[in-house]
Image 1 (cartoon, rainbow, N blue to C red):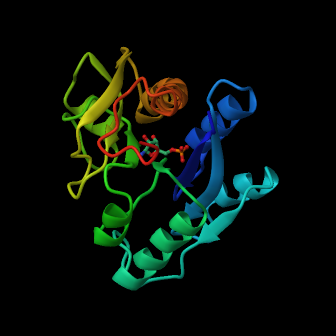
Image 2 (tube, protein in one colour; image 1 turned 135 degrees about the horizontal axis):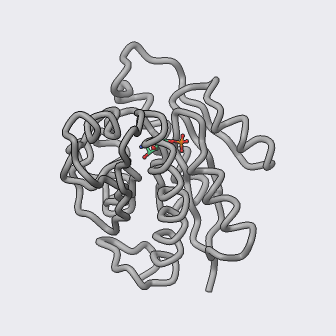
Length: 202
Ligand code: GRF
């Protein structure tokens, strides 16, 4: 079977992208990353992609912090489509998705979030978990819709909160779980073991 073509979107340090790229390189995930894109030209994720000789795309600078202007998002969606992306993977992408991306890739966008959704959506979910004094939190991969961290859950991993945890120590433990979960979900989607709302290959 042809490997699943992925577009990875991120705004930050790109550790989930690296975990996914490594799992693919080791033959554990039948997929290929055909484009790595960011809303920030200086994001570390783009430098990491260039080191791996992958195609990269940086959005033009816009006026807002939490969303892209419609024409900037439209160009991003077009770049992903032109690269032949079948599944868009949000890995630390910090903007709310609007109609261009959602309509170009209906039922074909997943996100990784550092909590057990629906608990603690939004920013700094590990700090929210500490403040709420829960005994466990975790990470979630979910389908993306127009609500922030709101689409249906695909799979979750629980992570314990330990006595004396700081935001940093808890976030690091959650990220270790994320780095296992994201490649596993992409593998199972690529192998048809997780049902797709809209599978481009059917
Ligand atoms: C991850 O914790 C992910 O859950 C959240 O943003 C963070 C991205 O980290 N959506 P990285 O850039 O992959 O290191």
